[in-house]
Amino acid sequence: MKRLLLFSLFLIIGFIAEGQYSIHNIKPDTLFDNILVKKISSDKQQTHFMIWVKKSVPCHYHAHHTESIVVLKGRAEMYIDSTTFKIKKGDMLTIPENHAHGVNKVLSKRPLTILSIQSPEFDGSDRIFGKP
Image 1 (tube, helix red, strand yellow):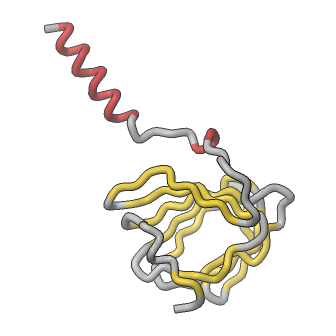
Image 2: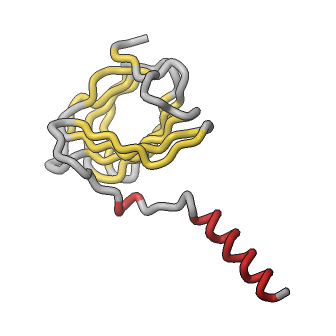
């Protein structure tokens, strides 16, 4: 009985840890000129991406997705609709669907590194360039 209980506990811990990762260990795996996007995880509720930006991000919006970002490294000038502001390591913001956004300019020497969380699941087809 004890062995069965221990085995069950190991299985449960294994399933809990399956979706765990350290964002600090995720690095670009290829050279890139301006933007590199790497999918970390995804299910029908959400998709996580690491995004590295060297220069800027063109104006775009998501008609059916909310995007939350956490700045992990770097500094930049960003905008949502007509509001421009600076972002830096530790900042978090949420961009509701149908709101134009982008990065005017990266202000740091190293790439801007962000964790982007799209909800619901994001397949790339809802990135619409320009304004809604």
